Image (cartoon, rainbow, N blue to C red; front, top):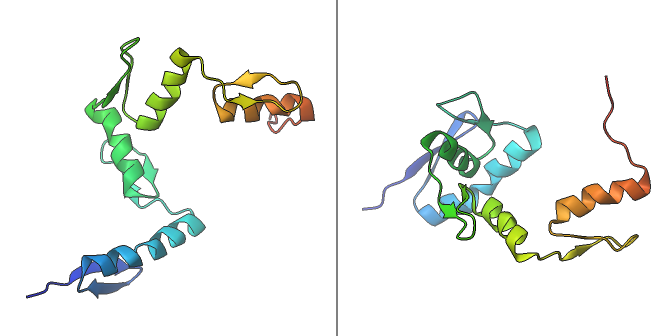
Length: 128
């Protein structure tokens, strides 16, 4: 006997006979949330809200103290894999991002992007 999973979309419930159908349907919600800026996933511990459950789950680690990634070189711990990987570049000395103007090298792309603004005179922040 198959069971249908009830999912709420806007005001109308939609049911699916298979989990795969539900998974294929899910991007509709993601697109809607991205387009509207809606943040329906609320943290029960604080006022933060998120556009998807993955980010809420990551955020909850702040409250639980769950730290899954530990650096073996300096014992610093991280709750997110991406932050841990970024930290590891400090120890490796790896600097794969090079400025095409002055040839200075950086370990992270975001730092290169920030650095590049000194060459373009871009000043996006205004003092009120």
